[in-house]
Image (tube, rainbow over all chains, first blue to last red; front, side, top):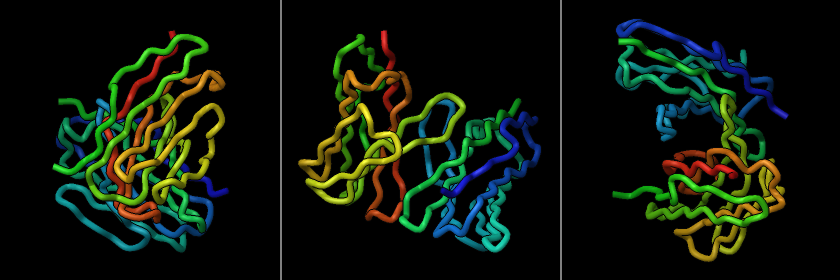
Amino acid sequence: GIQVEQSPPDLILQEGANSTLRCNFSDSVNNLQWFHQNPWGQLINLFYIPSGTKQNGRLSATTVATERYSLLYISSSQTTDSGVYFCAVSDSNYQLIWGAGTKLIIKP
Amino acid sequence: DGGITQSPKYLFRKEGQNVTLSCEQNLNHDAMYWYRQDPGQGLRLIYYSQIVNDFQKGDIAEGYSVSREKKESFPLTVTSAQKNPTAFYLCASTPDGFNYGYTFGSGTRLTVV
């Protein structure tokens, strides 16, 4: 099956810093999504981005499907950005396959 | 406000006991999902349902059971056959079955005592 690898596994930054999170996937996918899980466990969808670039405030994402990777950019980090960021891809059966996540800690 | 309600937030299970986790949505979504999350890992699919009275096994269905008698409700039973049930359980829904437009509940943390 499709493998999803996220890097780095952990990231600690000072407030105000910028960060780039990476998601590599091993095969062609139907779509790719980024999620954020806050420290209390609540998951929200950030981007649905099978290809191209999207921006939402301080967050943006780019997927290069032909090279099988996606990047999530966080600019001017805030403490509320802390949590785990997951990348998930859909295979040919539209089943969602999740990466192990990048744990981000933003220090004040 | 529309959303997904999971209850309880915390649940303790004794060895050999069955427990049921509740998941209710008022989003009028067709598809519902149960995921298990272990520390430091991604989500793993237990069961999903794309329509009332129908559900499919996910990657780790052994030791779990579900029902979908109403569109709004998708309860998960953790049976005594599940040997390592301690985990964080997340319920989710999507408008249809194509894994887009996810809404998640706030989760249930299950601990075996």
